[in-house]
Amino acid sequence: MTYRKVNYEDVEQVSSAMHFLSDPLETEQVGVTIARCDPDWKSKPHDHTANDHEEIYVLIEGAATVVVDDEPVDMEAGDALWIPPESTRQIRNGDDESAFVLVSAPSIADDEGDNDEWLLSGFAG
Image (spheres, one colour):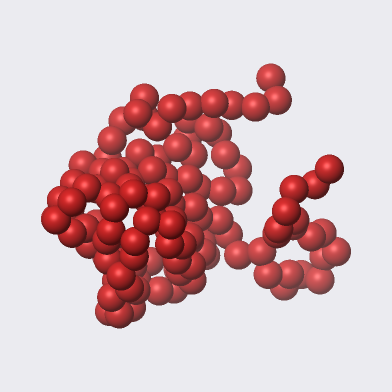
């Protein structure tokens, strides 16, 4: 089989919001999480310095605030936010449910001088 499929609702919920999809999808270089946040829910403040993962938070439903290095960033449906590995981040949900897609991956900076390049935009083909 050349693909793997999972429905996030079939993945056990963690911290009363997070559905971590990387394990059931057996990903090797990218983390994907669906966060369905109840009203007034807050994630734990954290960073990804240890694994050097940058993250993108895409809010697909509702409104929420993401605090990055003590700076609140108000988000509404459709907003995407990039966060570097060393920055502390925390989701603070408002009065209504919200939903995020969270994507994380190691930095793709070419520190080794390799000629390998990642396709960063568009679709090949």
